[in-house]
Length: 547
Image 1 (tube, rainbow, N blue to C red):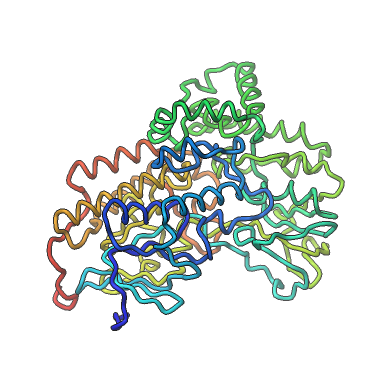
Image 2: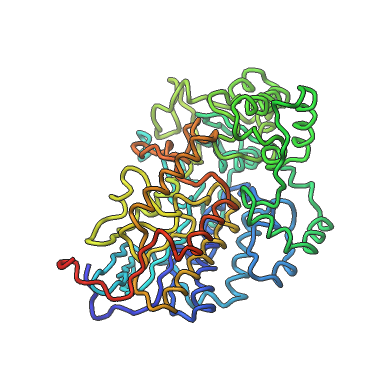
């Protein structure tokens, strides 16, 4: 790709207008005084909360910490409705942030970046869009989200289906009418578990096609009131400091007690109390070894299985809902509102597709186990090509035209999850190899945006033309990420953390599981040691042919 005469010159190009893109634009423009343009595929801001509008869509981090910390006045002014914010509320918040900081003027909507190639002659990125835009920028920064590339399974016969079908990750903005309809939901991950109870209240009959039973803990959204949220505002500095140095980006004090040292009665009492409280406290507030020791984990896993047996009235249905092939929290920890209770409804049928897989989608519905389920609507709650899928859909090329998708063909290779060897001046916000999806995302996003903008500021003040990860540092980081992952429950399940939901995708653990605080320490050490692990060039690169 060559730069035509009509190429627009900018300091930086940012991909995406969700939490990451909005904050990145603000930092580059307002702190560094740079010319910046963000490109967003949708027609408004919001990122994942723009696209994921399915029934029941809600964040699983508490509202008071699922927001930006950089605007302290807004922290005091904004009123969250409850414990866990729903999608419309988060979208309103992000629109307010965009307007409050006048960010829209530097965002181009309804535009998809199709290619970004590094020019070694100029140390600049040449970026093209589907609208014909051509931009030359010194810095290329991705805020495209870890869960933004929706995955519709390749099921035989989908093209023949005569009803309507939708993916939860790309939901119609005017909603879907389920009233009295025969509905099939395929998938019981996070989006499925949120959507199923809401759809069941509207549908004539709901069929849930489940391959893998899930562990999920009640959210208890109703347990937080305005008085609690007002009290939070009185000590926000303390709360944010705790979140930034925590394991998961949440202001939760680590527990020191062991499930193996407790008596069965003590364990039962603690689990019961946390179950009643709801939320992720069941994992983070119970015992430290639940996430690290299989024997301790078994006690929590069995407690949840007993709750399923207790809640679901039909024994056969309860048995199908029991997760037995993976430990609790080896997949994404889920929280729900009336998920298991939904299977007590007369208009809900659980279809086990692990033992009787879906054979095909017919013109009238879904066939599995030789039986056809006639459906008016199919909902694919089948998740995403996580972490790398959104990158693979863009033609990104580094030095000597080397494609990023080829570099990552055996799994993503990054340094700190923020940079790639061979791709100078390209920075990723919450990329593979960072805590990202294992954390409260705004906390990780702010840390990355601030680290990246500080690195760019360092380059500009010192006359550096290019900053690039060292291949050896990258290799060591990838090995470190995998070593840490091998000490956890995460590698004991086929999950999207490892790309197991995508046929043919390499099985590599992608996020960094040591924790937000430990990761922040490592990033700070890199800076303190003069950006250790990076090459910084003070002059224009020589033409590629002479290198």
